[in-house]
Image (cartoon, rainbow, N blue to C red):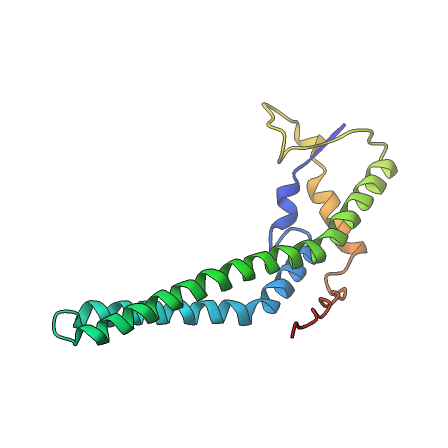
Length: 164
């Protein structure tokens, strides 16, 4: 029997290098959407400040127009945020599913090669005590990283057809 702490796989410095590489790729892919959402939030803040600063002295029609603009930008932000979140989660699954399979296969091979019949994930199962000598986390990460370089290519997302 052995214990592994899968949360250690995610550590950017000492974890599975391929995970960090894939995460960086995913974040780069979504950088334009994040910038767009940030710009919308800035626009909302600007409109809100303009309304608050001028409502006592500005023409009521001007204030009404700014509030309408603010409502529209809020709706746009909400929609784009939801769309971006859904697309991010979908792409995250596409990118990480192969890595999860690779980790599972590698963990099974690692265990068989060392005569381990049971591995318990200490990140998901609380332990009152586990001796250090049954923790295989570091050994597995090192083994996996040596056999699976972080520079492996990531498949690009399929182009989605545009609707007329």
